[in-house]
Image (cartoon, rainbow, N blue to C red; front, side):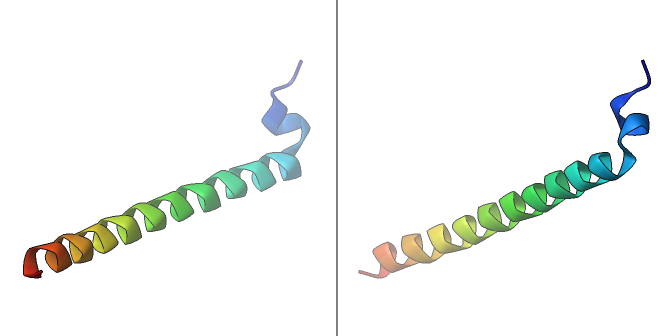
Amino acid sequence: MPPFRDAYPEMFLAIAQDHIRAAEHAERTRLARRRWWRVVQRGAASR
């Protein structure tokens, strides 16, 4: 039984790219949320 990667190379690449895209999106979301949270904190402090 060959590994999945060898049996379906293009499908494996598609899945890998999907995971990379999801990871990049998660990272961007986390950074944006942190930035937004800092803005909210600053706004609450200045009130």
